[in-house]
Length: 126
Image 1 (spheres, rainbow, N blue to C red):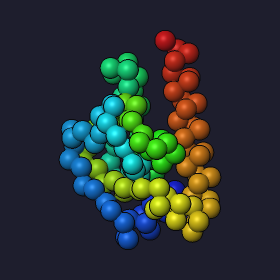
Image 2 (image 1 turned 30 degrees about the vertical axis):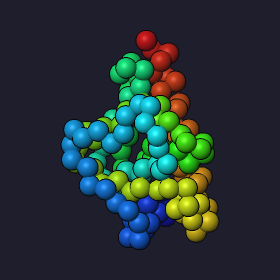
Image 3 (image 1 turned 90 degrees about the vertical axis):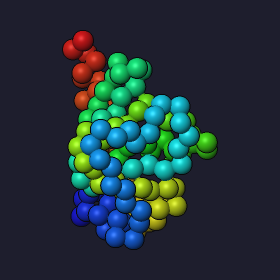
Image 4 (image 1 turned 90 degrees about the horizontal axis):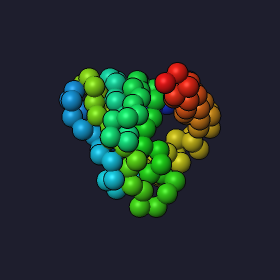
């Protein structure tokens, strides 16, 4: 079972949002208390006034900082590039997922690490 499979299993009991292409999911500076898992579609993350950008796909998560810091403020903007299906995970649901499937946490860490490495490689090229 991979991260996307785990998110799909959680979606059967959880909150799933249908977000149309072009819609803003959250904006920089807004308060957040949940992270999102992309079940379908793609999402553009941008920060520093569009100076930094990343596109994430099904199986990835974003907004995870909201689970680890109280009264978390979003660092950037998240916008649906295509019609999206997003799993909403608050801290309780995330901890449940990790308890039920410890590999879920490892897969998410691997995904986030890979994304950070790609962003680092992109900044070297500038």
